[in-house]
Image 1 (cartoon, rainbow, N blue to C red):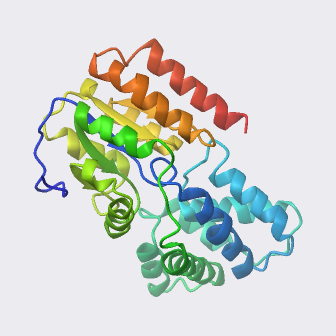
Image 2 (image 1 turned 30 degrees about the vertical axis):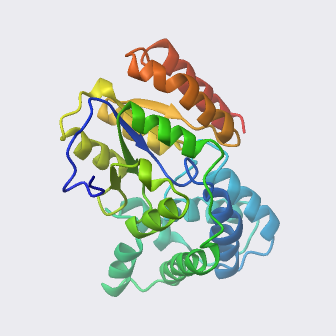
Length: 282
């Protein structure tokens, strides 16, 4: 059984794609509570750290921008802080880069700076991002855990069809986390950030020969929903702050409907509407 997309071959007619952070793995909140938000406040000299963290959590976890790229989130939250009266450095260069770059990544930002765009806001953003990665790697390892019901849901999914991890996390982190908690045994192929954005990963998986109506993406963020819809495949939402019940419904109800060809239409539409309403009303 292969775990890499280059060697993966379709074994079943059905494919279930599953996101990791905030979906199968309970890692998303702690990363924002303890690393992304606090380190941003420190690097950019935020005075009202409590208000900044509250806004950071809203933007990244509890709103329709849940799961947004880290650099986009940084710009949004710094602009919100400025509007609230924080006296910050000029972040115009950072905002322009985030709005125009082809790749919102450390490598792209580093290359942009090295090309002669040595603005303080860019340097601080890069420093922040690397410090976040370092902190997560050194301090979070071993504190990660699956959401209640995720393991059982994945086991049921593998009895239903092929199972793929579709995540923006790097492959090394996925391998470490999913193996440590006994989840990888239920996975047929891993599509981490090395494969590309989730929309690209799903498209590549479809090339293995699946009918679009036989593919289900399980996710927790609007970006997961968009990746599924842009590929014409189904979506099952893991509801933020209600993950246990979401995984129970997935195992006990949604998978059977998916297997029977009864998932699309009113059932799926109702789940997505409830998901969108939840994010809009947090």
